[in-house]
Length: 253
Ligand code: NDP
Ligand code: 8X3
Image (cartoon, rainbow, N blue to C red; front, side, top):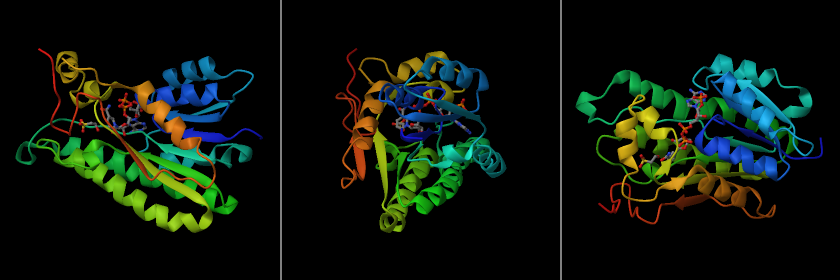
């Protein structure tokens, strides 16, 4: 297969979906994952054309068994993954630790940290065998700053940064790039998921200012991926103009 292969976790919505679109426009072959099979199939039909082939894998990144089975099911040619974008993730709830929902904590830790590790374990092995590759982990401003009521989400993104830094040192001798993208507020399904489908609460997050879009982040991801072989971007911190820190968003009333 001549074209590069990019594997994007969480490609059924938001950043992952927009990244899939940009990469398909730029003739990458794609492996797209998520838990919603209907969306994966629709996206595959939309993106697959003469310039781009698409494989879809429907599984939950929280399950080591599902991750391993899904990756093992890929045809051998498709295991030559050039780019892994660990994007699948979520925030669940917004509450102080003494009132935190333990199921929410586990969902965030299992998805944002353990899911990323399960994917990286297998795919980095494939990359080491070929002595080439690029792993890009989607972190957050929450990986740089902690904010009240977000202790566990922030902790998971701090963990993403620590894992990425360690993996960069482990994998540099194998000619494999590792980096992070750290965005501020992006209007995707993120807040709808955080507030368990409460559309009013989710909409309030983006009121009075212009948040980033999934496309903004996808364009930055494409920039990172399209640098020359000798250039690695360790991290990009990208904020809406109206957001000066995790907690300082300047809204027009
Ligand atoms: P969305 O909710 O729009 O998309 C999340 C994607 O992750 C979906 O495709 C979803 O697919 C997938 N996903 C979630 N949980 C799982 C799981 N257990 N197994 C497999 N796939 C899963 O959110 P965003 O696009 O905004 O989020 C993408 C990443 O960006 C996350 O890591 C998030 O933490 C990070 N981020 C988001 C910011 C924001 O303000 N929106 C800011 C900074 C970082 P499906 O439901 O089909 O499984
Ligand atoms: C998502 C952005 O500010 O909700 O990572 O943590 S924030």
